[in-house]
Length: 306
Image 1 (tube, one colour):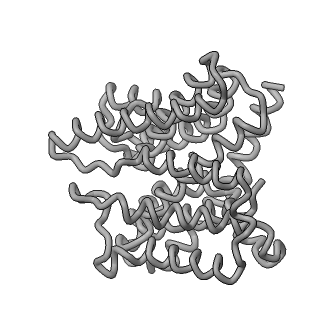
Image 2: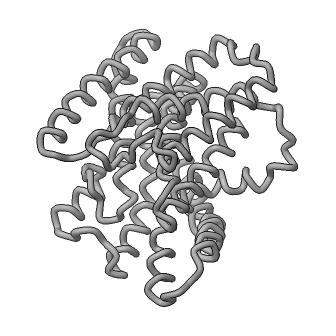
């Protein structure tokens, strides 16, 4: 496990919580998630000999159970977005661009990515060419999807580019170029990239992804530099000092899937709750959910599949 990347998961999840409470910055955490996903999927593929079915089933059973559970909770509490039978079906099959569980839209893109990777794994060609093919399919799919959505007036963030960026970072890391990075330079670039990524919108340097004219280049570059230099600085930070950030990273998926439920519950019962109190409680409850729900589910599935 790359600890620095786990730290980034924690930062990204907490950033998204911040956005949904304060409504100013933090949505950029999704960009980090997508770049990390691109890197980690190819890292897994090249370290372990997997067939297509095994790869896809592992991703499915890692992602789906908690998502299904939180989606059911959202439906039961009346927090669902447009809960028509068709949208519910699309949400549970990861084919909805607007899921009943609001944050679930990102998982649709994740599963498109997983499907493309699984198809390429199944092909009887060299691994190197499989990776090239993934890039070609994602670029083609991104172009078709962006033209379709933008022609209808919808915003589209060219999200497949972030997965491709993760793949490129994997190639750079495999060549061991990152080991040559000076720690001081690396930390400086990492901090500047984080600053630009998360505060660029507030300073008027970048546009929110909900804007039809969303400038993907800025988010793509900044999020890629964050992941690239965090990876290059692997092992440079004291593990004990960042144990809390590792905990947030481990719990990032639970934090991401549960935070809107907790936010809406608290806001519906406490009109004047302080935003910072809500932020802290929501993150802590996300970590608690990881310990009592996600971990037991994950461990049970591993035992059943072993």
